[in-house]
Amino acid sequence: MSLPDITILTDIVIAAAQQELVPRFRQVKPSYKDDESILTEADQAMDRHLKHELSQRWPDFPFLSEEMPRHKQRRLLQHADQPLWCLDPLDGSRNFAFGLPSFTVSLALIDRREPVIGVIYDPILDECFHAGKGQGAWLNKRRMNPHFIKTPLNRTLALVDFKRLPKSLGVRMINHTPYGSQRNLGSCAREWAWIAAGRAHVLLHGGQKLWDYAAGVLILSEAGGDSCTLNGERVFKADLDPRSVVASSDPELFNNWYFWLTQG
Figure 1 (cartoon, rainbow, N blue to C red):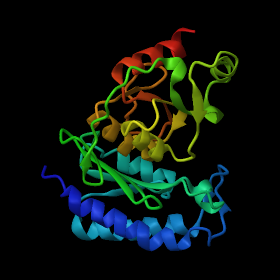
Figure 2: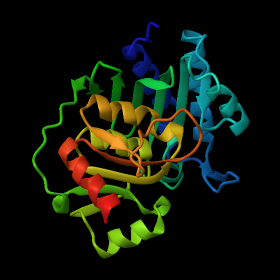
Figure 3: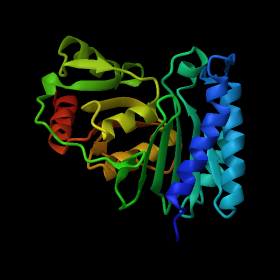
């Protein structure tokens, strides 16, 4: 399969976000889905825009989005051996809706049940993280080559989402904090991108959906980082069940982080 030109693809994502998301930031009111997650006019506009652009250029690639009904998502994943777009048109909808400038667009191309292209774009900072399988990871036009400074776990900056963690693990982390400081950015894709870029040391999340991690897992891998689930499985799986995430851009630190999480 000849992959789409990643320069053309990133240009499409950037233009769409600047047109559909930026003008609507702080201008839209949220509505709530059945699962209490937030949906805005911006999610829907971005979804429509990218679906149109991608289908115009690559008409043979089906399109799976977070905003589609679950039965349609499930049907598309039955054929995930063929190239398939996977989109989160606005990752961090709650931040967006309440005026917090921490949100991204996340797009992956899945082929043979593996991500082969990943794009994560932050329209506020105008940062586009992208990777092609076997082609390295990039931030705008600069290749990401994190320099590993041997940081002990107890001095790390950790990105942790406590909400979805097993309660016993969350309590243990509070009572016996293993890292130096903790943040949660409210956008899964942004956290993958920032870990890949070396802006934080370790990542932990209790349950991400396919569109949360599809692009990020490839970008981190191509940047030289490691990830797995709390059960030690590969994070990427072409289905709809949530997956836990343990990750770091430093392989040695990743091993120490995973050991602390699973052996305590």
